[in-house]
Image (tube, rainbow, N blue to C red):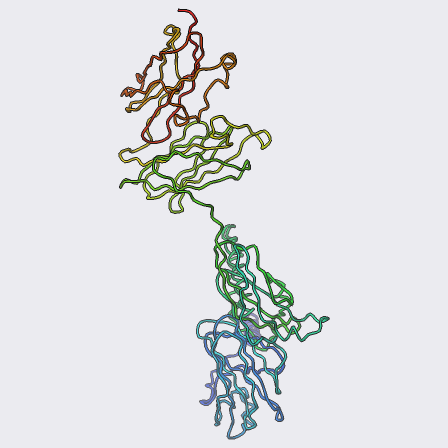
Length: 580
């Protein structure tokens, strides 16, 4: 028992000596809390972190100093700063210097007068230059950020004339726009005296041109902060995709705790040379003309020019400008008339041929029908229909007739793009169905559909059948499939020569794109209306007479419709009998 009591007492004494002492005494009534003394050194660039509120910097000058200059450079946010001279009536007592109050605090609370020397509000670099105040005991520089925490740099210079620590701006610091193109902008500005007065061997000064699509930067610090913020946002999005662990949470908490401690104003600023390497200057050097290229068409950009002193780590900003690049050269858009049958030809055999058309359907229903058929050998055409910038449909059109239903808009933009062919330019063959021997063509028609609600029905097959038993010396009987809609069918004939009849191949057949508008009236045999509500029984026949015995003929049937291109059936070659 005695031994344990002794050990407990000894442990209590040791722990009590190590534990921090708490004074219960009350501080004197006139005692004020200790504030850190913030002295502004002369001839050094001082970086200051400004919390939301007011920050004071104190400095004194030599007795024989003829003048002084104070330069304040905000980073990105506007700040208020005031320079005052405080004169004390009585010098502080020596015994007060042993108290907890710092020396500037004693002077500030002591009896005296203050005289306002200069004040300014803004986010640009501002300097005060003037004579000193011989009666001033201490100078006070008050800085205040109204919005949120920010940064600023302060430089104190003793003497008359410029300090030479900051680059010089010309009398006209405006950045001018010489030319604007679709993807480039040319800028010019008055040269800085800091660069023109330097010999060619020295390269401590140079320009840096920055471009962005958000705003003009008041300083190089603001540009670096914006770029850093954008980089952090990209990194944050990347981190969100990865799996969440405990370490990122602890790391974020650690940096938040670290940021709560104020930055020491006397700490030297980060070297501009190191940060300058991270800047993405589109132009860099001593030339006062810059052409910014690789821009997007029809986009507004902001341009800033900075003259940088890499030796002292300072910079000055010109007054930035903005410009909007020109829009892309849009191709001509051809308006299509109601029911117009148009041949669209692609003169270029390349893979990027394209043409644009517009169509406005009539009637309150705002519906229409677009019919296309590619007529080139091996050609495929991509058709894209859009309205008000929104793509409605996109499909390929080949030898088969394509129908596109238009509905719900007052106007449509039709984009035809030739997708190419297996043949090259040297092996291109002129299609006989093309007018005047053109190559690579599309047959197209647009028409308003007043009472229709969709694409018209098509025959189940486009084949023409001839009956051998009904074939005579001067007549043949043909049959083809129709539709349940009442439509007009026209039959055309063409007599073949002996060589074409012997070949009996493709040369004897009529090209698919050759429509009735390209046929002679003497070739038309008959036209008849037909309708059958049952699609399986929609078969019609026609007896073609007035033929010569033992001759070969090519027969074509066209389905003539009120809307769209006439549908051509597959050509049929029939030879009449020699003897009957």
